[in-house]
Structures are given as C-alpha cells and as structure tokens.
Image (cartoon, rainbow, N blue to C red; front, side):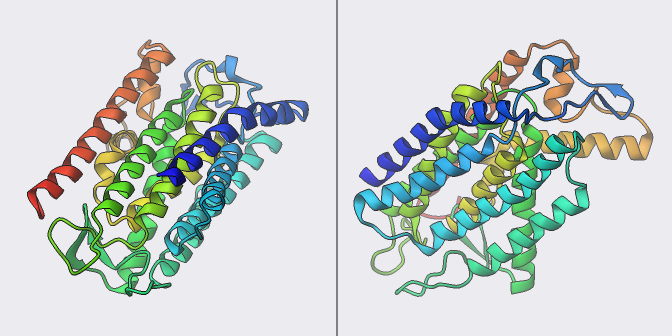
Length: 358
C-alpha cells in the first residue's frame, strides 16, 4: 500500500505547507470574501470577526489532491487509470465553477457570488461530460469506470437508459457539491466532514481491490474497474483536507470557498459513482444530507406557509442563533458525520459478510 501512503503524505504536505503560502499571497492582494449581513430580513450570525479572511483555499486542496495522485504513481511507476482521471476531471471542473463564484464574491464584493442558474449550468456541463466519459474506456475485461446500473454497495439489477443515467449522474453531483457547499458555513466544518467521507472511500477502495473478482463472479467479490486507484485518489484528497484543516479550523485563517466545496462534493460523488456505491453515499455523507434537507424544508415551509422551520438555514446557523458556540457546533456536527461514516462502512462490510444483498 505504498501508493496510498505516498499519495496521502504528499496531499498532507501540500495542504499543510501550501496553505500558509496561499494565505500570504491572498492577503497581500487583499483577496477576502464578502460577509453576509442578513438573510431574508433576518440578521445573520455575528461573523464580523471573519471579515478580511482570505478565501479560495480550495485551490490548495485541489493542488494537494492532484500532486498526491501524480506523486504516488510516479513513486511506484504505475500509470493512472480511466476511473481516477475521470474523477479528477470532475473535481477540477467543479473547482473551476467554484473559482468563478469566488472571483465574483471577492472582486465584486457580492456575497452571493454566481447567480444560481449560472452555477447550476456550470455544474451541469461538467457533470454531464463526466457521465459520458465514465461509460467509455473499457479495460481488458470490458469494464468501464461506471455502469448504468443503480448501485448501493455494488451494482443492482436496476439498469438505467443512457438518458436517465446522465440525469442520475447530474443529480448526484449537484446534490453532493451543493451539500458540501451548504455545509461550508463554519470554520473547519465542511473540511473535517469531507475528510471523513474521503477516508471512508480509501477503505472501500482497498477492500474492493483485495476482494476483486479475479476469476468469475462470486457473491463476496466486487466488479469495479479501478478500486485501488480510486483509493489512491481518495487518500490524496484526505491528506490534502487534513493539511488544509490545520489552517481552516477555528479561528480560520482561510476559507476554502466554493472552489473547495464544489470540488470536494464533486470528487465525493465521482468516487461513489465509480466505486458502485451511489446510494451508500447517502449514509456516508449523512451530515451533508441533513444540512441540505434543512435548507429544503426552510424554503418549502416559507413558500407554502410563510413561516420558517429554523431561525436560519443551513442548520448550523440555526444553532448559532440559538446561542451555541461555533466550536461546539462544529465538533458536534463532526461527531454526527463520523457516526454516519461509521454506519455506512458498517453496512458496506455487513453486506460483504452476508455474501450478498442485505
């Protein structure tokens, strides 16, 4: 597993030592994100102390992941795989969309960034291109990076037509990237939760590699094109997140911005699609699901009844307005994220032990 260790180490080093360099560069140019003062007429949590904190820190996470992935392959003289490259394309493509959003926030000082339609259009272009790519490039066994079957911990008998598969990929990528984006509201919250989910995909990738279907198909084996390479990518991403978290933890010296949150969400969705664990991601990323649902409930309730369910959405800001300290919220939400990851991995392992679908 030298490949995974090297990828993790490089990602960690880039995140740990590259972030302060980016902080100094951004501060020297005065690149700081605008702070939202209110939400629909309601006062936002007191984040005035965060004003002037540089953003676009996601650039370090993306760089750490790319260099960790490439460095691991150079060290072991292994070539990249189609699965890994497709996920990297998805991650960097969404990072570009997020960068455009951050650019507007910083240079135009408009805290809302890109308009929702523009951002969704950018996400659609990148995710649909990814969806097309993963159905191509079969290996010598005829396996492509993804299949049109809906998966839980492996492919199910439900196979989607190409059109529905493209839509399914778009919905997964949009949900994951926006879920991480909505979670990124408190210092270190999204970074720590994302590191846990990416760490889970290191475990899943290694387990699938160790139990791959070398000959024939058995209930205990996995038919995944490049599980080890996906584990390497997830390891580089995990290392980069932990390195960045050193500087992003409260009080944050830099924010990841949409550059980081969209890239992380896209990478996580890409790992789920290519590892055949699409529906399992709902459990592994349970914190992102809960926070996204809080926004959906808030918007739906206000439009239908004129009343709000929470003092403010996303959910973490509701607890801020209830008087909870930021660090307390982050740690407790990390606990929830860890429990969700543990539940997801437990179900993944239980399915393998049982020898088939649960």
